[in-house]
Image 1 (tube, helix red, strand yellow):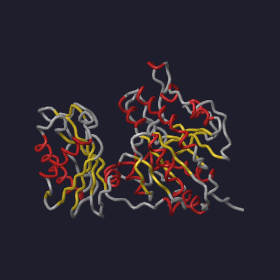
Image 2 (image 1 turned 120 degrees about the horizontal axis):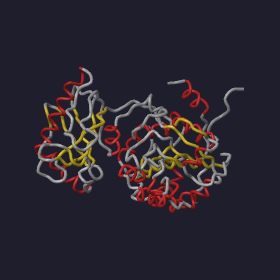
Image 3 (image 1 turned 135 degrees about the horizontal axis):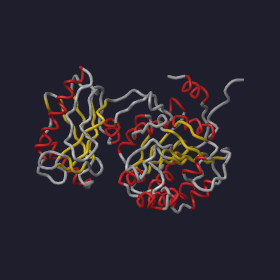
Length: 405
């Protein structure tokens, strides 16, 4: 453990203060010319966020390092107070944990997409048209019936949301050092999985055999007639938040990956429902049981990846409209931010620093005009690495004692 982490954990003190971390996934953005050179945050009508900004301190945080584009796992680890360089957790294990799948030492989990391929196996749609969750379950059932084990390795398949599903490989001599099969773009065939170490050669062979069998089984099923696999990973060893920060934390999220990561760092998990209003009502009903609540809003990220400016704006406005439900419970510390930026013009995650707002009795407000990128650039929090966000939240909640005499 680094000295910085050790210091914070030595200074932590328990009290009755409450912390809410509201993550609008991928909320950060860059200007879109076709919308007057504005970002979605600038374009959105957000009266409640505007009012809150005037009573808060603003800034921007860097998820990993300057110029490094983070995945969702590292992005969230950072805002939870875990250095994403020190703690690497694969996407597969996050998804599996989020789906309440049994993961034992030695198991390897993969995050998978159903995809659409042409007659030659070339991927034409990496997400199979975002098929319904019901269709995903139907195709997963077909795979389960036809592929139960390969060379004494048990195959466990579970459907997720829309086109997503998880495969867990259970057996002896399995290791996580293998490459992904997802080419990350249309117009290419799925990649053969390669072992990165000698130990992982058998694992790669099992995974490639699974792909070949799966492709044969579903090749005539449109649009989900192929699969892509990535994030092969084993269960990590990670110190929980209650031990590190003396918190009783809860995650309120709908998507499995975020629920899974939260479980791995020791949070209880509640379903957020399908809207910000649903999520905030879950907090309202359960806030007395926890002193730290992570609330996750997904669709700011989804619309960013789709290049859907208006969809991202609409999601931000829906958060703003529901915000009074959250504010009515008067958490001692409220932080609103994202795990990373997902700019609409790029249709992907990016390295751009993430807007952040902290509201508390002691925050020392900036009198910011709005919760937007340019105002956050001028805020009192400045620019800092995401892993330090937990320090600000604990300090504003009075949960850190003085350092030194």
